[in-house]
Each structure stands twice: as C-alpha cells, then as structure tokens.
Amino acid sequence: MIKKKDFVDVRDLTKDEYLELLEVIRILKEADQKGIQIPLLKGQTIALMFDQPSTRTRVSFESAMDKLGGDALYLETKTMHVGEGRETMKDTALVISGMCDAIECRNENYDAVVDLAKWATVPVFNGMTSVSMHPTQALCDLFTIMENLPAGKKLEDVKVMWVGDNSADTSEENYHLGGVCRSDTFLFAKMGMTFIAAAPERAKMLPEDVEIVEGFCKESGGKYIQTDDPYEYAADVDFLLTDAWWYHGSDHLKPQKIEEFFPKYSINEELIAACPEWVKVMHPLPGNRGYEISNEVWDGPHSLLMEQAANRFHTQKGLLAAYMYPRVCKQQEALQQYYTAQVEALTTETIDKVAGTHYGDWV
Image 1 (cartoon, rainbow, N blue to C red):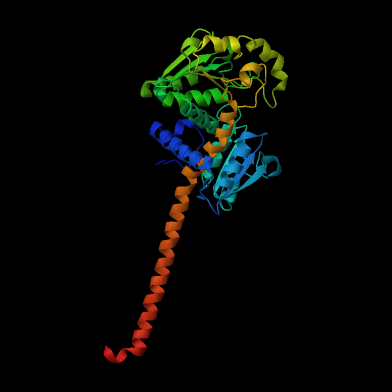
Image 2 (image 1 turned 60 degrees about the vertical axis):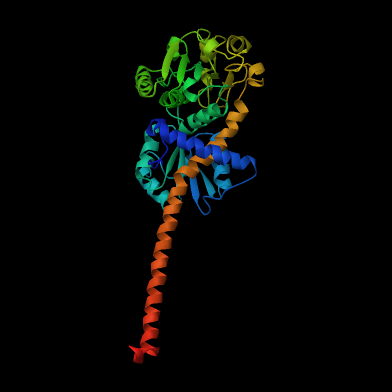
C-alpha cells in the first residue's frame, strides 16, 4: 500500500511501491483494452494547473479521470490569482482542496509544486517541473519497458542507454533539458536496472545527481555508466532513450544544440545497427524529427514512441486510482458508519417510544 499522499518526486516511493503501481496500471490497461471502464472515482474532481503548454500530460489526465468516472478542470495558472505578489500557494492549495479531490500541477518551479503539496489536503501530482522532474513520464517509461522486456530478461537485467542531453543544468551559459533523463535515471536506478548515460562533456549529468543515482544503485544492485560515445556500449543495450534538444521557450538554442549533439548523438539507423536486433527506441515527446531520432527510426519497427505516448493515459489511470480511490473508500466507510449510527439511534429511540406507549403494562 502506497503511504504517500502525493506523487511529486520519483525518489519518494520504494521499489515495492512502484511494482504495486505498475500492477494497478497493468490491470486497468488490460480492462480498458477489453472495453471495460471501472468508475472508481465517480463523483470525484481533479484540478489541472498548467503554466506551460501540454499535450500528453493534459490529455492523459483528463481522459483518465473521465474513464474512471470523474471530472477534470483545466486551469491555466496565468488566469488564476496564484503567483508572485498575488495569492500565496498555501491559500490556493487550501481553496482548491476545498473544492476538488486532487490537483495536478505543471510549473516551471519544482519548489512551487512541493509547496502546493505541503498545503493541499488532497493528493497532488507533479505534471512536470521545468527540467528538474517529470515523475509521471518516468513511471510511464518504466511501464512501457516492462511491457517490452526482451525475451528471458527480468527488469533487473535490462540495460538502458540515454543518448544526448543528460544534464539538468539550467544556468544561462549551459542550458540543458535533461529533466526526463534525470527522472528516468533516478527511477531506473531504484529498480535495479543498468543506466548508460551517453552525452558530451557539457551535457553530462550533474555530479550531485550522479551521487544520488549511485546511492540508489548501491541499494538496488543497479549500475550507472557514463560515456561520451553512444557506440561504446551499444551492443549490450535493450532500450535507447532520448528527449528534445530544444523545447518551448528555448527554441533559440536550436543552432547550439545541433552543433552539440548532431549527428553523433542522434538515434539513427547506424546506431540501431550497432545494437541487438531487439533494441527498442523511446522518446517522451514532443520531439524534433530528424534530429534526436532520424525519421527512418522514428517511424520504424524499433520505435515505441506512439505506444509510449498512449501509455501516458494508462499510467495516469493507475496513478489516479492508486492515490485517490483509497481516500474514496475511507470517505464512504466513514459516511456509512455515520449514517448507520444515525439510523440505529433513531430506530432505538422509536422502539423505546413504542414500547412505552403500547407495552407499558407488560413491563
């Protein structure tokens, strides 16, 4: 049983809790594929707070909540009162908690989501915090890998290589977009997998993040390997992952990123040929076709891109069910006890009155 109220950081759950979550996702996906929708969250509402554009995160949360029988409210934070010099996150969290049963938040600032979760009395889900953390995407990536394990391999046997941007350094002189990589690395290390980080020197994972990853590997038996040559370990890799080299708000970096990563860190047919025949390719999207992944590979037999994207929906269903349904059950149990007591008290009182009126002579 997951004890955390919120899903804000991939570091917050244990390996066993993740395995439990993966099983919930698997069951709900299996039911969905057979046309079965289970209205676990009927009458529940989630508020979706976004201060950045979104396709997969927004659609997956809205659709997942709908399929579970609940409702979703899309809220652009620029149209809300919350923000610097305006309403505090504490007040916003408490107000929304009084009206909704859960909150999803995509925010530039990781600390803002942490603050939201601190004050909210309902579950809070991190829908991405700039380049620092994308836990729902990482969980989706893990689930997609679990569904596509090479024959005869367990999760702990899997070798993943992240090609390209590994860094979450957002300093002005060295801006990188390695947030999904950071989230995946933390999570995969927790699960005991081998993670190979292939990046040029300026785009390597930050030393403080490497320290965290190596700590998880020590506990789980996983491995972390760093290289600047994607071909060095290609022959042993089961999954190739990458992410956008430039993104919303950083389009001006395109020339710099092409110079930094292309073509050496592009997942193309040449790199695929150096990998085992069963290798699969993943990308959280949106992506820049022809750069992070060549068009031939993007649309080819090794690509899991669309399956991975669709799994965002199934992942969100599992998350919502795992975090919200136990609260629904507790509320229903408490209400049932309350109204049962009311009925029992009323019934007892009525019996006493009747007994006093009609059967007084028998006492």
